[in-house]
Length: 252
Image (cartoon, rainbow, N blue to C red; front, side):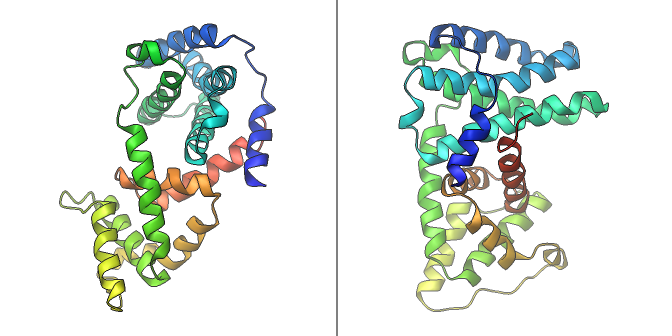
């Protein structure tokens, strides 16, 4: 049901109607413009940010790639559409443009990744795309599987540690894979997880966060874990996922 609603919300947007080749050319011009966002007028940047997600989706459909994508990749595309919409909506509000720099960069990387899927002979046209993205996404799906096998108390402990490390920007923080490996080893032995050691852990209800992540659509959980594995705060990522789902289930 969630997948159908998301699909309907995205399809409700006007499709560019280009052939895949023309769509790729349009995407390349748009990404070139977004790369220079600091020196362009903000309304132009905002408009382009709102356009690139639906455009790359249209190209994926036209190239026959969309139907073969795994659910976590589809969720990533929907998320890119939502981010573009959020940037587009922000420009009339006189926001601090600088805070959107990282978001624009991330959007460009996502769009280029999907564009490269439709342009196997011209992958060099999309230098923004992370060549390791597919491998990281598949690893995240496996980490999500490991996470789901843990008792709820250990799942909460994993998210609690990663939240604290991201919030404090701990340079010695462990990766999601490392935390999960240790949690799995202790859980197999039947040991209970340690309790919160820091006062700021009170700012996160880890068991409730576990439930909120579990309630996300399946593909979105995979994309959430890809972002957590890259070092993002689990609490912030889960909240962003819910915002993105709401955004793509409604028209602009």
